[in-house]
Image: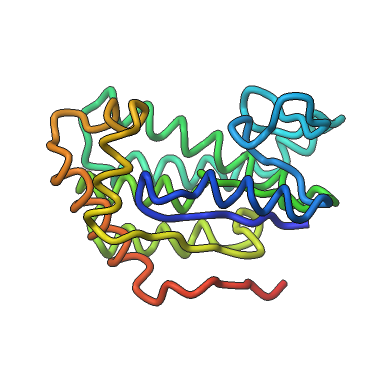
Length: 203
């Protein structure tokens, strides 16, 4: 059963809303460790994969298409070498994870997934708008895409307040000011998700 993915500017409340959804609908499963409450029976590995008997074959079956995508991503990403390597490896892990979640019979919830990864790269200007939009579509397609995208955004001032209060997000500014970081991510979100209505993908 394909998963539900939240997407929005950093600090907009994706994790909070994802946890509220999991609390309200008990049949849903947490697809990231950050969403798993202590004592919960919902367990995922350090890679965010369900702790279930996935076979090596299920992981290897899609590696050919994964490799084509990560090679294209590495070629297009305009980032320093170290960043490019790290971001490409992150994409690879996310592609594998998304395939496994989509093929799993349960319904999973993800607050940071492929769409967030693309948004982040666009916000840093490592991808052009056209490239980022193409990646958005690739990551929405079978076998990687979620069954539903849920969009989260906040007004600029409120987003800045939340970012300033979050040590995790402040550590991600990477030389940018608070306003620059917020503005770039809001702009990238608008470019990629201007029609920000929750999308349900027909399967």
